[in-house]
Image (tube, rainbow, N blue to C red; front, side, top):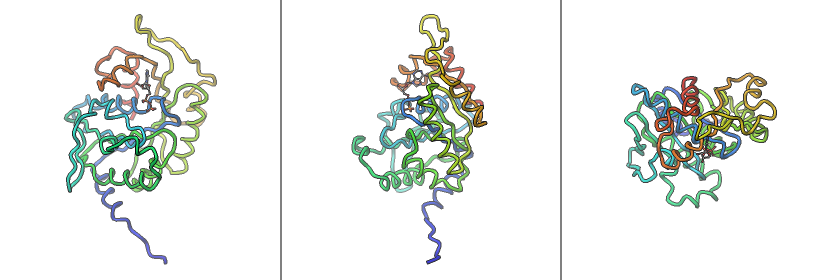
Length: 270
Ligand code: ADP
């Protein structure tokens, strides 16, 4: 009864992850706060350095958004006996989304934990990333089966840590606190927290103004309180929605936007 059961899949995952220098999870307490947008724009910004090989892995089973944001919605994904080839949106930027593998997106909404775990494991084990400098994981909001599985399957694989994102409102910040507790429980380092949708970039004058005042000092105050790095505040810019819906890199299309500057600053900190 004290036999140690070794899961051979975990060995395969570990071997694969040895070829990936840095692994970072992007987390949020709530949905709709800009987590997938941040993941995609960080990937684009970092990939401007041609010497860096980067992967973006979308493990949101019930709402994968990277196929659309990365303009890869209709790209064929090749699956063979040896594995799954990610979609290369640039020579040095590979994208893989659970959305590519789901035949019917709507079915997944009712999947229970074990089925989700199985899919995440398959994903970690079989996607052929090759050698990467950085792999970013876009996760579902909150702490769900997907998070628990990924932490469990990547145990011993040296995850660098998590970047959290929240809007300035107290209601979103409260949910980030739950996320922070999750990180603590699973011993996941917090690399820092990003505030999103703070301020507004006026389409006509391109100036920045505050729309939603942060009631209690927003994310910056939270970071000071819990002593984690504040990674920056990204303003609302309606052009982000246009770019992401069109599957175009916002940071390349609107390099003059203060939001693009912020994505660049954040990418320099990770
Ligand atoms: P999440 O991944 O947290 O659910 P998304 O990244 O999908 O959130 O963002 C939700 C919506 O808000 C999307 O339509 C996205 O284009 C938009 N969005 C995200 N960040 C900004 C921003 N800074 N300014 C304007 N729109 C944004």
